[in-house]
Image (cartoon, rainbow, N blue to C red):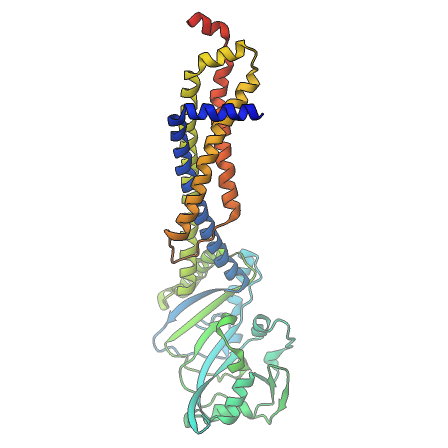
Length: 426
């Protein structure tokens, strides 16, 4: 075996120019292949992170609604399935049926109130968010808390920070009635499960401002419940001006994120058919950016993979041609070796070892150069380049396989070489 290896190295030296061209092709090909695969892997990693983040947290679709002089009977948010602006939960049953998904939907009407709080002699403004919610709210935000028939109780759930603000803060005079009502409801339940008994009082929503935002679920990561007061939606008065702008959020839980665009388009189509051009229907920028990025990343990744395969084909074809030329030049030598007793298998092995030895050398240099290139020359602000050992190992194996595969066709030519034919040609 050692003798064969020495003979192979000698043959490579004798054909240094041709094999240098082979090594150069492999070097360029493996360098580009490693770079492209690494970038493609990094893109895929970024895409999977986006997809996983969306699926493991929540996919949010916001539809921007605008109607001039809109006045809403807020009781119908939970009672009337056909009222336009509040968009009852029943309106979205078709989504569950169509996509067979576990789709949690909860209506939330949110109102922010500012309190003046004194701390060490310095006045500061602290905001408390009043959330008027349906029962599904707790299924989304507190799935481990058992809240039975929340809408039929007189309980008010409140965060610790919000309670401290309510007790210590000074509310503007135009919202005093709401402040008093919250503190005099039947029962306030802290989100840490402590309970405070408080005397009930009517007219919870008598003197609030006119700006409210309508939500159909929101992302839990964007809502600090410690600063919120959570009340049953029944506490809303019969008539509430929601202002001329409302935002609707639809949250998809436990659903493949690839459906996000289809679901969003379906909802917009549904709303347009039901309400016409009464409102403007647009995607939220968060979801739009998510969809745009994932589509771009997938396209880049696919393009780089196709380019890598194309480069490999060119390398293999070029290497096969060079080995054929070398075999043609050594036809007489091969015939003499066969006459002297060399087996066809030994000649096959010699050719394969020559080409593989050269391609491995070119591949190793290409891998080293690609690592240096990825570390120093290539910069992508959109995602982090991750050098994966598996890709480096794959590139090494590819360089070796190129040498083996490219030798198969030339080896078939050797089978046609016989000493008799060579002697007749002399």
